[in-house]
Amino acid sequence: MSVGAAPGAVPSPLDPGALPRGPDPALAHLVHGWIRDGDQRVRAPLGRATHQSLWAVDGGYVVRDVDVGVHHRVRVRFVAAGSERSLVTPTQRWVGVAVSPDGRQVALQEEVGGTGVRSRVTVVRPATGRVLARRTFRLASLVAVTRDRVLLGRRTHWRDPATVWWTYRGPDRDRMRRIHDQAAVRADVVHDRVVLSTSPPGEFCLRVAALSRPAHTLWRSCRLAPHQWSPDGTHVLLTHTYFDAAGTDTWWVADGRTGRVVAEVSGRLDWHAVWEDDSHFLTLAQSSTGTAAAVRCDLTGACERASRTWDVPLPDPSVYYAPPPVVLAQASMPVK
Image (cartoon, rainbow, N blue to C red; front, side, top):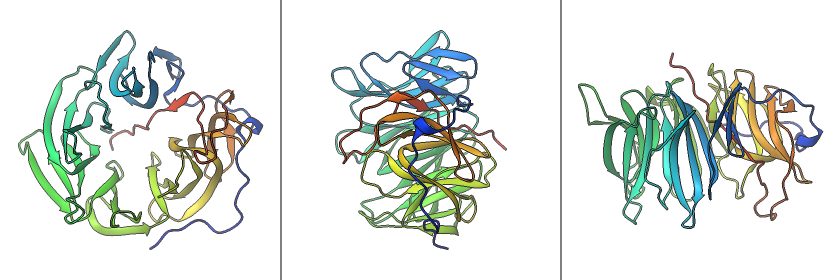
């Protein structure tokens, strides 16, 4: 089945300053240099850097910073109350991050050399800094990590795509197992979902399948891409497969198995959205006048404000969106 946008009238663009005020986010989030998680406050110093991503993990948090120092490096750190450690040496290249569903393992991907062909994947326990495994791959992208395996999407000059499990510990340690002849770009191992690229370079078509049966298609789309399944797996957040700007103009709520759209929220919105519970998701929004805040929306597309508001100057029209000083954690889901 092919999935497109929902029929019907497009909702009015979201104005966060005009929304009713609800409670603060119920999941971890960064505001300026502080991680807020319920009643807990943990300092994540900025220095000359920008906090770009946040994950709640076993014993603390993982923070990915960009534009670090005069050389504009990327760093990934474990942060806890009273402690902090680097998980990789700060680099001028991008560092991919994946967190296992139980939060005890973090996989990190770093480019090796300057060609972009080879990359090193390291699996580490963030709470202790212990390295569990390390291996270098050609033309592979980090997709997900579990207690004993790493999921990779591989493209060899687009002629030999594949999805591969790398077992990094246990009796089959260092085994590579190819499970499908298309490259995975996203996965939810808890809910047995994988998103596979079906397009040549420059196109954006995707196929959603069961991770345990990747040849079994649940739905396809060349317009909308799955971002995150709800904790119970019954719904999924979608946005554009391609939108040439910072931020997106729409988040859709869809059935988690069929991809059928049931609600949408439009406006100047962040590319990241996260489920707060089975019935609500959080994202960041900016109005056409520059008021920005975190917002909470339900399964019908009704929204409320989940933070104070900030006045954030409107960016150049080609950029489209500028965020408030908030970073929402990537969701961590319990192992079933």
